[in-house]
Length: 103
Image (cartoon, rainbow, N blue to C red; front, side, top):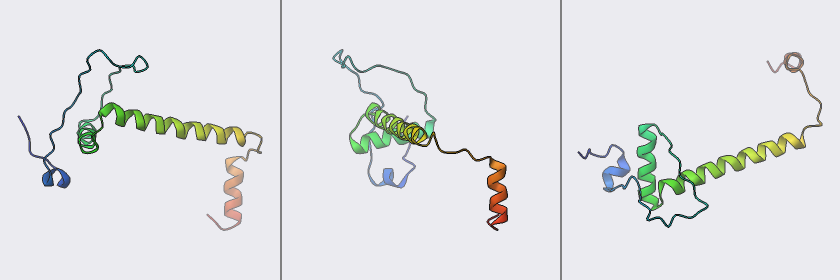
């Protein structure tokens, strides 16, 4: 049973969303299959985005995961770069902020 679209963008343009694409056995050997469970509202948003951008859910999720991992790599590099900096105790920082009238 089809329900009516809830978002304004969906009301303006009817989108037929295919929830999955079947592959015919020619999937690249470098691709691995996994099952991921999304919140229902997030899954719906991903399906709409996939339809609007003409990309698959896998392409969207892969791009998001790659971006997240790239950000993690940047964070780890920053930690390594700052490894030799002196550590400050939290209570010392709070005391300093209070003395300077910042808290």
